Image (cartoon, rainbow, N blue to C red; front, side):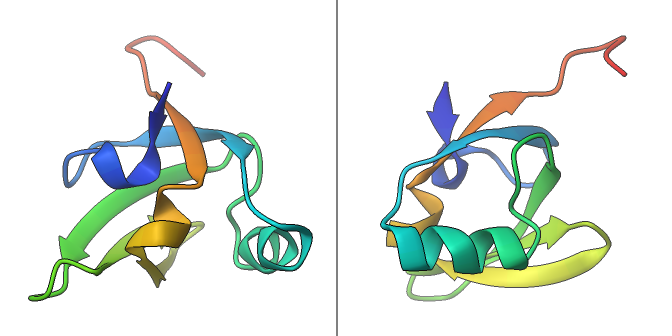
Length: 80
């Protein structure tokens, strides 16, 4: 498994685990980063400290340290 920050732009992945303290984990889940959700990295800030992700039809920016706590699995061809 990789963390969300390692995924190349425009590659779809699925959330497998979130390794963050309870309050931030709840906030990420409220934003749509739930187990099984499809996520796509879209762009990065000039500083490289933030990335924008497509999540459930919305674009949400996360700090690098928060994105690195979200473990994902790559979407495979033929998966449902």
